[in-house]
Amino acid sequence: MTLYYQGAETLILDDWLEAVFAADTGSDGVATLATGGWYPDIAKRKTQPPYIVWQHQVPPVDALTATDASVAVAGVVLIKVIIQNRSYAPARPILSRIVSLIDRAQADIANGRILAVTRRGSFRQAETGDNVEYRTLGYFFDYQAQAL
Image (cartoon, rainbow, N blue to C red; front, side):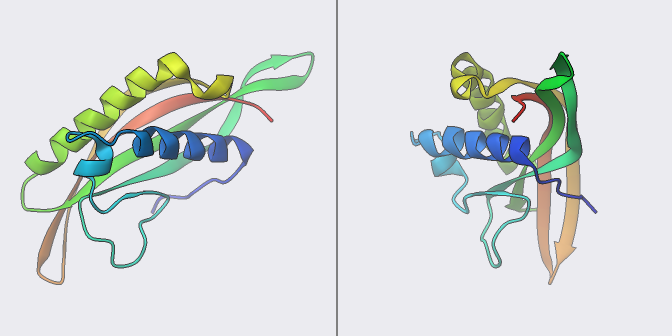
C-alpha cells in the first residue's frame, strides 16, 4: 500500500506535473497517449486506461537550510503508467515521453519552485481483476522543491 503524503511542497510538485503533462498536446504527447488522463494519488473511478498516476512515497524532508529556516525540501515521487494489456510494451512510449518531458521541463523549472527532478529507479507491476489484465510501468523520481 502506498501512503500519500500531503503538504505544500507536494502540492507544488503536483501542480507542476499537471502543467507539464497538459502542455504536451502533440500527436505523440502525453495528452494524446494517456487518453484516460493523469491524476495525483489515484485515478478517478472507472477511468479507462491508459492513464498516469503519481504518488508521493515519503514525506518531504529539509534538503537545504539557512539559519534554521528550510530553503528546500527533498522527496520521492512514483510516476506510473497503467494500461489494460498483457504486455508492458504499450506503456513504454508513454513512460518514455514522461521522462523526456521531465528532463526538458527542468530547463524552465516552475518559476524556481521545483528545483530538480532526477530519475532513480523503475517500477513494474502486473494485475488481474475481473478477467482483465493490467500492467503498470513507472519510475521513482527524487525531487527538490522550494520550501514554504
